[in-house]
Length: 333
Image (cartoon, rainbow, N blue to C red; front, side, top):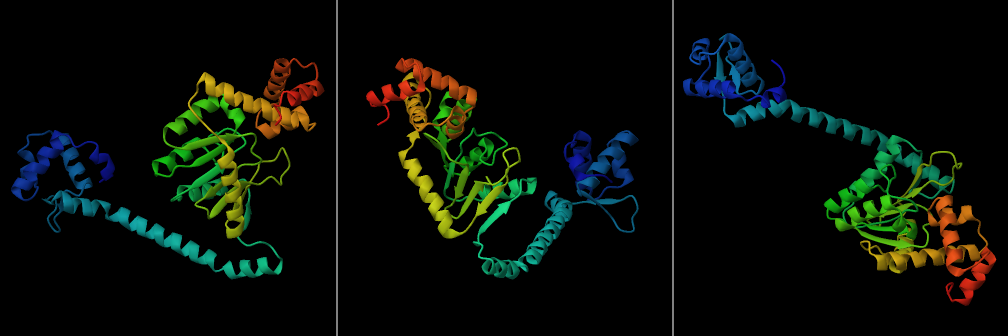
């Protein structure tokens, strides 16, 4: 007769009147239908909707007659195929998992023979990989500590929508980002949106590589062992001692990072001083603009602008002089 979902959205007066009349008479027959004085088209439409919703069931051996049932019985009848589909899919999932689990001994033996560390998997940059990683985050129960050297874009593993979902699930993620995100309008908007929901955000001089630790049991890292122009995959770490070490390193950085606050002139000025000091330290180590930019998570163009501002504020004509003046002023302590 059609799809119950279509009928649900069209429970108009004709449908309700026909159901009411059928319940009153204990069944629907052509004679009962004529009591509504509807056109043949409207009556047929109302009858189809009630049958689609299983509110009218055909009487066996009595063509054209239907018996009305309660909404509870109709609901059981209507959703039975959906329950069966869910059961079938669950059985399929269990079967796939069981087949894959049978190769576990082969994997374990091979890993031991070749000296690889169990619990560390390098995953390719595929849709399936990112789906798997986001599922690890979505299953988080207690704690997420994350660090990213770039902005929280929707395309990254550590994306803003995903973090917002964690907050909704009453998990307050701790997020470490470089100081430079404080001076980007787009970044600030996203960070303030995240902070307002209850997430904890802090910034540091630099973040070496993206990393997420979930419930102190799983770590997700970016696979950096790829060419610069190639898409990066991910490294999934579940080996306990390695995850514990990574968590400890993040926690150490977190305790020394600066809390992210809503924008104000005072806080922005203070954090800009931190950025300038980071730039001076890196320049003092002889690093080129491109290296400084990469370490601070900003574009080379923005980095050079900040360097020029630092030199101007110090009254320096060269990088060497800027370093010398900064040292004398105690800015590198």
